[in-house]
Image 1 (cartoon, rainbow, N blue to C red):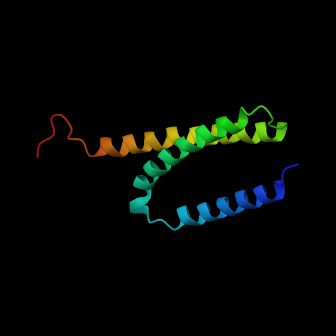
Image 2: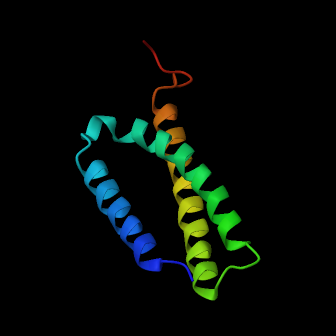
Length: 98
């Protein structure tokens, strides 16, 4: 039997520290940080897929893994959309005079 209390403790600690880290970032650095977290979330998607698809995964593990896949995928897509929007702001408009 696995020690789920330890895993839950690690998850809660990581969630708390992640929340505090993102909350402390200045507004000017938020979009570059989103680009970086999109790359990290892509790694999380792969890990969640591996955990969810394990042969000995319990129903709870499969449910939490599915939620992790959906949440990380949403974060990846949203991060890239925000980054693309920011980059379009810096493109030169056609017909605009300098």
